[in-house]
Image 1 (cartoon, helix red, strand yellow):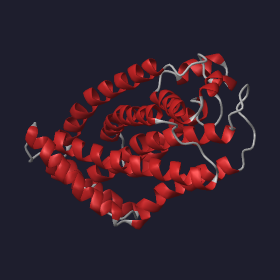
Image 2 (tube, rainbow, N blue to C red; image 1 turned 90 degrees about the horizontal axis):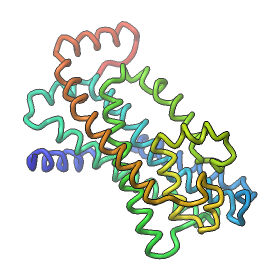
Image 3 (cartoon, rainbow, N blue to C red; image 1 turned 90 degrees about the vertical axis):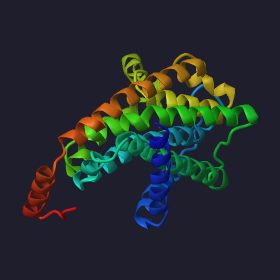
Image 4 (tube, one colour; image 1 turned 120 degrees about the vertical axis):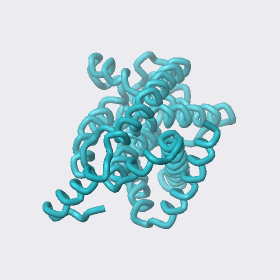
Length: 283
């Protein structure tokens, strides 16, 4: 296990260097930040029942959504693409390859997500008078919510990536439910504006709790009036995110191992032939 962690960290460091040299990938994350800032810039109302600017709630929600998106949309797409290119096939011959692979992907996603979050908060504060944590306690809350939130979605994203079909279909299969959660989890407007059954369904998934935890770190206590329970419920936030993290890790490793076992040279060659016949570039 120690060797897997060491190999995973080394692999993650290599992938991060490649990411930092890839302007296209970096620009896609910065585009999400720009969209969040533009949305916040055109909102002038307050959160109903409070004097907190609605733009602050939106920026806090987008901060959580960006973490969620990187783990649950970007990561599965990367995994599916690399599976198509034969990465999982090569892992079959590597002792401890699957755990090391998962560690590397977690490291990359965590660094990219935290970097994107820092850019969003700094740019929001400078350009649209966005919120920042007030005091050491708020910064610590933001730290543990971000950590638990990523632990909740990264292994889940890996598990989803292990079972999705080819990259061309993966995005379509992921985007619809993710957009549904974006609209029902209190990210872009107070969750109390939604029907109670919708609130209850959203409360099953991690995005609602990630957004609530981030809001608790960035918004004043008066903004609690816009929450389902009229409180931040931080112990419940921690409990739900921890449960999703455990579930994700229990699913991710066996599903990745199963996907690796199913890979073969003939399967990989067949996929390349199909891609060539359809006019898509082969790996």
